[in-house]
Amino acid sequence: MNAVTFHGAGDFRYSSVDPPNLQDSQDVLVQVKEAAICGSDLHLYRGHIPGIMPGTVVGHEFTGIVVEVGSGVRQFRSGDRVVGTFHVACGICLACRRGDYHQCAQGGVLGYGMAFGNLGGSQAEFVRIPWGDVNLRKIPDGLSDEKAIFCGDILTTAFGAVKNARVTPGETVAVIGAGPVGQMAVMSALVMGAAKVLVIDLIPDRLAMAETLGARAINSSTSNPVRRVFQETAGDGADVVIEAVGGSTTLELAFQLVRGGGRISAIGVTAESELKFPLMTALTRDLTFRIGLANIHRDIDHTLALVANGRVDPTVVVSHRLPLSQASHGYQLFDQRQATKVLLIP
Ligand code: NAD
Ligand code: ZN
Image 1 (cartoon, rainbow, N blue to C red):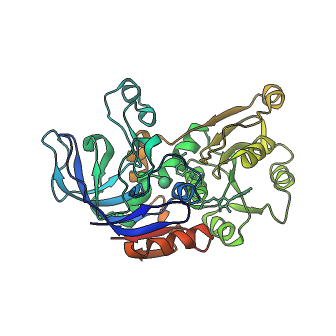
Image 2 (cartoon, protein in one colour):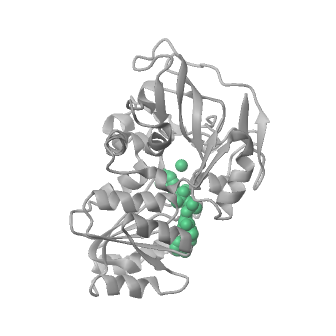
């Protein structure tokens, strides 16, 4: 089959590889209909994620059609339209039984290398999904693949981050980063009742997109985001800050934007190992800080319902639909910020 494979920083190729097979009775084989490029794939593309071997099939956002199921699979059969979760979980270990699927002892992230379970990715004609009953959802009738694909990662990631921050109706939410994940955080904050959503980025087009969704844009290359957020909140600071970039610079900014007693919820991925934690500030201002990978399994049924009922339309971020064979061009466009979200069609 044809797939997108990793060969080093900036070197992702469309190549011919052995197709995946069922390896376990719980496996499901999916023919991929749509695969998206994620900001997390950019970390691989930029060479920031260690432990991925040349030739690995990349990608973790996808929809498709079930073509084969293992003998132990109960929920799916050939022909089902499905969306997959970007991280896979076994469903039965202690972490999964607690509901912490993203902490599964045996799980991993599709197409993200050795440190993440060494699983084949979904930017391919076919993908093997371990524990298919746990890691796939049927796409509701009438819901397009193009809408459903966002529930397997970025919409649900952002929704979960906003939920973790316990946003209540009437609050002000500041979102750092207006990439696709930041845009999903804007939509999620509004659907959970935020009165005002402020979004901070450096790219005018992305800020303009967030404005069309109902946010107020702050361009941090032309204005001071701290001053602007305090102006917008009568000198108080944001009730909640969602960090959707990754790394210490924007995490430090989050601590400057939040009000006393407020909550920071960070989802940006980074390979940095340390943050100079503002201990005294966090102590005296009574701040809540949380960071983590998304727990897609916890929230995906709710985001599918929001999208299926027209309450959220994540497709606003899609700027490019390319054949899978043009994936390396898609990566270049996304890396250079000339694309907001690229869908790849095998
Ligand atoms: P992206 O790279 O398209 O977007 C990042 C945005 O941040 C860009 O618009 C960029 O201009 C902006 N930015 C960069 N530096 C900034 C700064 N100093 N101040 C303000 N804005 C700045 O990526 P994306 O797809 O939107 O993903 C965002 C992050 O979320 C990535 O790190 C991705 O890996 C991560 N992510 C995490 C999870 C999870 O489970 N936690 C899941 C999906 C994605
Ligand atoms: Zn992703």
